[in-house]
Structures are given as structure tokens and as C-alpha cells.
Length: 195
Picture 1 (cartoon, rainbow, N blue to C red):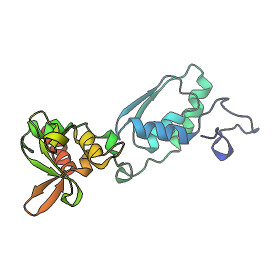
Picture 2: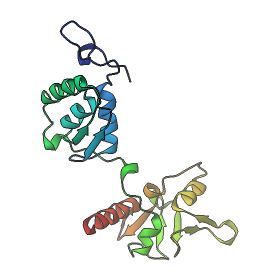
Picture 3: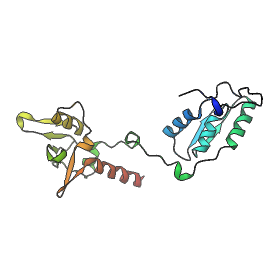
Picture 4: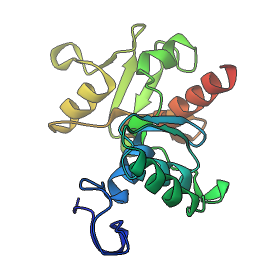
């Protein structure tokens, strides 16, 4: 992240920096998007030139800023007054999979979306495994049994280091195969609607 410079750097009428450690807006943009949602409240007890407040207002967040230096408070206030917030529809962000509520595979079994004994299939039905009551999988004959999580069994069957079991394993829905990730997504939506 580059230091704050160019047109973004706040200066007085003589070209002198208004704050010696002004932070770049791009830095606060990243921090605020990754840790808050629209309408959340952000506290910055070392407000300085008001970068946090300017970016918070732009991204439609509320903020409280404090600084011991009254001259910085005036600079921040003027800076923030000049900011136009984004339209509400432009502040919606896509959630990455890691940001979604964690749903273990066993939750699909506990909820009854997948029952113990259900046959799961790998791509093109090349691999098969049975779901056990604890949410683990078992595949193979007595001599070649493989057991473990959806990820471990998928990886072992392919001879791979790792496997995303959510996209690897499918459940039969008539003649079609449905990725178990779709069931996880449905359970996540069900839980969200109940909260």
C-alpha cells in the first residue's frame, strides 16, 4: 500500500502537510470493507485528518472519531463534509466463502438433509462413498476401506494432497447429481431466516 501522497495528501494554502501521518484512503477502504457492513458503527480514537471518517461515510458506515488536537478535528470535519456517500446498492459486497457462516458436513446429517447411509458420488459417478451417522464417509471394500471427512476421503480416492469435498461430492436427485455444497448453501439460508 503506497503512502498517502499526490492529490489525496491534505495540505494548507502554503503547501504544508496538514497531518504528518495521514493514512491512504485505500488502506482504510480495505480495512472497513473486510470488517464491517453498511450502517455499522466504526470508532477511531486517533482520528487525525479524518481518513477513517471520510472512507466510512463514502462506504455508508457510521463513525465516531476523536482526536486531542483541535486543528486536526477541523481538518477532518471539512474533509468529511466534502464526501458524497455511495448509493446503497453500490455498497453491497459479495461474500467470499470464508466469510460465510461455517457449516460442518455433519450439520447436513443432523438436520436430516442427508441421512446416514446415503450414497455420495464423485464427479461423473466415478467415486462413491456412504455417509455415516457422525458425518464421516466410508468407501471401499474391507481390504481397501477409506474413512474420514468429505475432504479427506475425496483426496485419498484421487491420490491428491487435498480436496474440496463440498464441490467434489454429489447426492443423487433422481437422475441428476447435486453438489452437497448446494445443500450447505440451503442450510445456511434456512439458519439465516430463523435468526
